[in-house]
Image (spheres, rainbow, N blue to C red):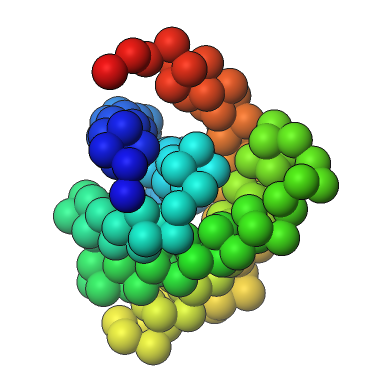
Length: 168
């Protein structure tokens, strides 16, 4: 693993955590997951499977530590671990086909949908849901996916520019 990529990924996750904490809930009491957006950006910028696994586990632990969903700690870790793998394999499928700006749009949209589905599925099995699975997907996951797609695109441009200007 490259130390530069590891440090950059750590910084991106830290920024995602701070944004995750500062943004108030507005989707039926649910917060948009900026940490998830930053996880996708870190995976694209690192392009390393071992680092992707570490990024996913770190994001899962950070999200679990800050979740407001009752009993959502274990579902968050499961969700981020599975989602980081999905994002990495989508990145490999899209390699040399589209530019990174398009990749972040596709990966953040599909990745957020997968993340929400895995989280709700794990929460349903482990602790139960406050409503029906389908209603939560429609009311929370779909708007969050659209929101994450837009924010990921903006945050990617900023992160990519900053990563090119950093010298070690």
